Length: 242
Image 1 (tube, one colour):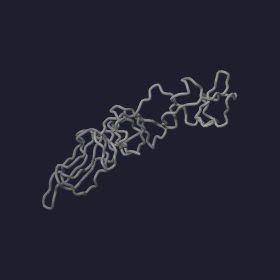
Image 2 (cartoon, rainbow, N blue to C red):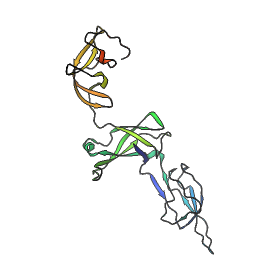
Image 3 (tube, rainbow, N blue to C red):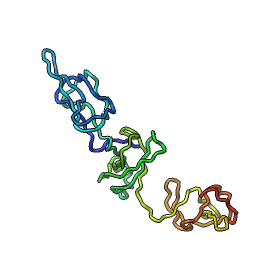
Image 4 (tube, rainbow, N blue to C red):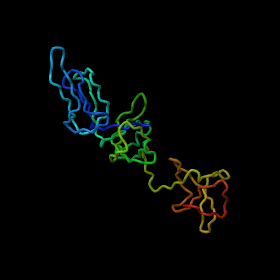
């Protein structure tokens, strides 16, 4: 699980002077424009009264941190809140170093969030750290969502699927289509007469429940995937779905 965050276009906002928070015009998630007054700071002290100091937004975006409560004492070094651009959502993840040589800028990825479990959001690798972290032996990798979507926002946890290698012109079958027969790994296809025919196969890599077939099958074969354990050569088969 990794957390969605903001890209480069997010900033912390500081007061110009020391004092106490007198008033806040925004809440967590509020949409703001550059120049909007966010907070008023009162620099007055016993016997001295000053005009309230305005704290304004330096960019367009949304408030992504909880604004301070009225009365809080602050200085010019105190971050009052953070403004982020919702159109610049990014995902920062850490991949094992064994994948470093396979990572490339522009690689495609899929993102899923808990609030939309059946929805897949597309993303692209935006940057890759040139060094491996010595402690964790991982590589920091940043992905950017390909388009903004109101259904996802910063702070959500996500699952990502990253496509590291393109196996062009490869055949694959569901892993349940392969069975063991007389010490051989085989699949069953359906011939033109509607009968099952076994084929010994050579397997490649396995990804997400599918197994690459290096030999023993041809593009266009109708492969049996259900009830394989009871199938025998020459058995008549009814096709339920392809």
